[in-house]
Image 1 (cartoon, rainbow, N blue to C red):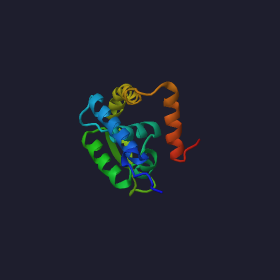
Image 2: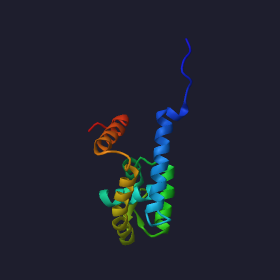
Image 3: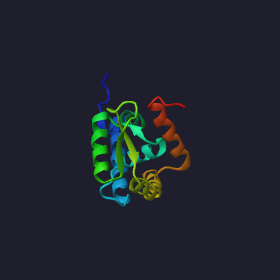
Image 4: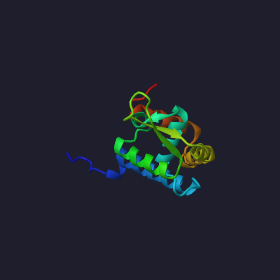
Amino acid sequence: MTSAPYDFTEQVGHLLRKAYQRHMAIFQQQVGDAQLTAVQFITLCAVRDRGPSSLTELVAATAVDQATIRGIIERLKARELIQLGHDAQDKRKVIVHLSDEGRAVVERTVPLALEITEATLANLNPGERVAIAFLLRKMLGDTD
């Protein structure tokens, strides 16, 4: 009995990575801001949605690790898209606030982000779009 060879091109991790790379390429082509990355955009959106947030809260909201979120915050601060403050009870805790310019960037980018999502899902019919979102959430254990 011979087993089928391992074909890495058919493995879920490889396919997810390729789909993610395709989405990131579409994002960079269509976002209209060469300095704004997808992860910076979701970080800005997280602060917009949650209000002033600690780095720990942003790690939880964005699924970006602590070391990476620090770099993202530094770059967003350098562009004056966010402002940093300190927690009233714990001065060691950094709190991230969205600046007026950051809010404007989010407002300008959201319509483009919707188009980017549409381009990413362009090869899928409506049922497949629902299915892929459901299945990805299920893979993550997020069945709510």
